[in-house]
Length: 334
Length: 94
Image (cartoon, rainbow over all chains, first blue to last red):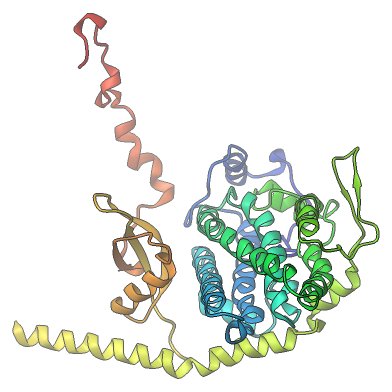
């Protein structure tokens, strides 16, 4: 999940009877499946939670460009390079759709950037792992984008209109990302034993962090229950993780790979796989800023933002100059 | 601190013969850059044949809380819909 552990502020989910008439009317609209649009009344908690969730999601798309950007200049063929460029460009686009959706809630993009750069806002833990070989680019597309799709498809039905619509656009494009990753791996496993070993190594390193993307079990979480009541979350983390494992294990088998989980076993009764528990201490360490690449990712983001300042300012200066020139010529003509 | 680029609303004509439709928004320093950015952000897969950009601050919107009084006048005029009138079957297509 690109937004992990989003807080909601409330201590518990209140029933309709406990709400004042305005809030109750709002909740009833959500229960009836109506979309909430910008400028309409909404509880402050709903607004704040959405800003957190959408901005975390947007930051994840933007930071997510970095591990892949590492391989644009190292792609094995010109075609792979063009495809990877297009994919990374999509991630930038996804970030922009999402920032705009968040902006309809009264927070500016520059404010959100500031929160990302100061470390106040989070992004998905997954992007704090390094991409060590070309097989990692395949694994990221297959697993990371695969997990993202699992999470984003139900979010298209989210109660907040601008977020839901951004996700419709995102989901349309995301399938390309997963397939290009799988395609890289299909090619590599048909190659030399050394190439196949690279793929297995990539799976070994990305499997657990991918499962962590869905966040820790939230069946007992107040935040999660509130988000579900507001329909800005549709499924529990465990539900989505289970779906992801069930979908992905046969794909790993197709590639001739071994999933690095000794507890992985088909459970006929539940019609899904049983699997081991990710190392949540690692997850919390990464979220807290202590993953292998946290510092590197944030530094790269800040550098890009700071180095681009003169250019952004230049464009603003140009726009202002052009505007005053137009104004002057209009006055002269009158 | 530099000034933030203004926000633009983007409208795309998907195909010849269709209306421009709102697809989202973006930031750009001026209209020309807004069109350039809109091409990259919203038409990476041939989604459009024409782009309009409008500064968000130039859009006047109706107020959601006045939705009732604003649209009420048309609610009561059901006869504006052709299905309000019964046409006998013998009359045929009308």
